[in-house]
Image (cartoon, rainbow, N blue to C red; front, side, top):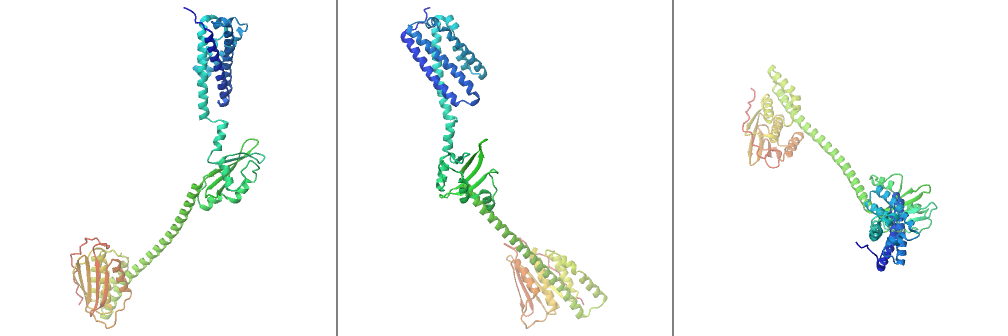
Length: 506
């Protein structure tokens, strides 16, 4: 097998390649020094410097071999007086191998292997085959340099550096101003300069010690503003905060705090809070409207309570009038008739003792039972209530019972009637009630007092109508709808049982 020989053009290509590799490694070392994390920066710089030393040494020796025109690099290198200098590669290889084990990087191990093959012992042992190692070393480190620089550029575009951080702060939508210990501005981004310029405040790098006082004169404290609007604060405490309106109707929040170590820096941040300020104003307006609505609601509830009390009072007054009026009319008739026998007195005592029972009975008591009690009570004093027709159910029946009792009371008291005629009829969804008597007629016009007024109110509450007059005797006419939107069920039938006629006592 013929050994691989390198002619003069091949040697020149190797020299050019090693020069390119060394140049790329210099750029890569510079980027690593400025972009690697601080914890691993020193170790990585030592590694890249070792590789740069290896490439520089290879370049020098290869140039020397090319000058003497040696086809075999191993023999040419072995004849150099400084051949033993290549043992430095062993030191480079050991350091790279140790770092490869620590970082678990296979590419670092390959670097260490190539450096170890460039030591005097390996060169002497491989002899003519070492030309392959030289070409492999050149190829690998050329690839390593190009890929390393590509990775460095990607990291620079994606990562943060001191320069990129400054560029980011300069283009932030929030304004940032840093004031040094002496009062001068050490940093001010574009947004802060625009805000200060719009407020006609100093926006240069000069003295900024009076800036916050100037902002306080044209702004308003956030805590005071939140208390005025009635909305909670959501920002951090122990910071100075001001709301300032810019001429373009923008609302900005200026926040001042202190940062830094033994030489503290004052920092002012400006945030656009226009939408938040509008939302807070709308929220405050809504809160005020809700408070006003709550106050008005309480007033309306008080009115409803007063109306309910008045309605209960009127209802009870009407009830008392009906019950007591009936009892007094019967008592008056007893006295007129001179009924003082023991049986009549016992009936009268029973009637009067039931007054409280009738007052406690609700307005929704059974109409039939209550009507029977009315008929029985008036029969005691010789007043016969003659009924014809059907008593409707529900509220209409209860209302008719109340009307019958009040009308009988008036007939007994004022007209001295002996008989009261009650006509009940249900036609076309309307209940009709007509009450007349055989009492004395009066030429005087009818004057409505509490009794008739109470009857009219009760009938009106059910959507009905009531009329009273002399036709020629005292007559009451009532109409109540028992279907549709009234209080009764639309299909409520009238009562089918007719009330019995009670004859007066002898």
